[in-house]
Length: 422
Image (cartoon, rainbow, N blue to C red; front, side, top):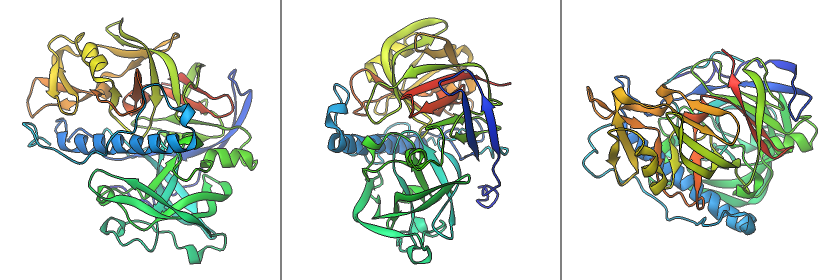
C-alpha cells in the first residue's frame, strides 16, 4: 500500500515545443502511481483477480453503451449492443489459482494521481481513466464499508458546492453500485482549477474498492459516454480558458509515469508523434489497426479503443483465437473468460500498427505470469470477449500503452503515439 499524502505533491510547469498539431503547448504534470496488478510476487497469474477486473471492464463499458445510446445513439459502432451485467463468477477448473517517481505496485491496471475538490479543497487520490467520462468521489454521507478508508467530500464545507438534482449510478459485478447525487464544485488538478465541474459525491461504493487506495475516478473520454451528460474535466478546463490546448498525454511505466495536461511532455519521448483520427463517438477510437506476431500481420483492419483503465486487452473471440494460432503451442486457459496461455520459453514478439510505425508491446507487459508456480506456460494479455463495443472493435489497455507515449487531442479529435525516451 502506498501513502496518499506522498502523492499530493507539488507539480511542475513546463513550456515545450514540437512539430505536432500543437506548435507550442504549455502543460502541467500530474505524477502517477500504479496500483497492484494481475501478477503475484512469485510471477504467477492472479486468475481470480483478473476475472474481477474483467467483470469490472465489461460492466464499465456496458454503462458506456447505455450512456452512448441515450446521448448519441447515431454514434454507436455497427454491431454495438448493451450487454447484460456480469457478476463475479469464478467457478471452473482454475478457480483455486489466484513529475515524481512512480510507486510501482506491480502490473497495475489503474493509474492514479492527486486532485482536490471544493473551496477549500479536499484532496483525493484519483484513477485517470481514458475509457470513461465521469468524475466521482466518496461523500461523507457514504454508508458503504468500502468508504471507511477513503477521503470524503463534505458539501457543506465547500463554499463553491452546488447540488444539481438527479442521480448518478454505475453497477459493478459484486452486486453493488457506485451511486449518489449530482453536484458541481471547483475541481483542481495539478494547479488547473475548473469552476462548476459536474461530479457525483457517491453515497454507496462497491465492495470492489474496499481495499483499493484509490478514492474515485476521473474519466477522460468524450461527453457522449458520460452518465452525467456533462463535459469532462479536460473539456471544461479548455472552455474556461484554464488550458490553452485541449490535449493531454500519458506515460505509463515502472518509473516516471505521468499525466500531462494541456500538451505533451517532450522529455518523455523521442521522434515525431504519429497521429490517427478518432473514428468513434465517445471513445478514443482509431481505425485500420493490425495485430502483428513475429513481424507478420495476423489480424488486420480493425478498430481500437485506447483505455488506460484496464490492463488486459480485448478482441472479438474469433479474432483472438486467430491471433493465438500464430503462437506455437498456445491454447485456451479459461474458455469462459477468453484467457489464453502459451509456452513461456517461446513467447513471440507482439506489436500493433495503424498503417505507420509498428509499435511493439514489451514481452514483460504481454506476459501476465505463469499459469501456476513453476509452470512452463504463461498467460497472454489479450483476451477474447464481446464487450458490446461493436463489430471488429478491440480494446487496448495499459499492456499496450506502457510501450508508447500516448497523446489524446480533443482539439484535433486524434490519438498520437510516440517512442518513449530512454
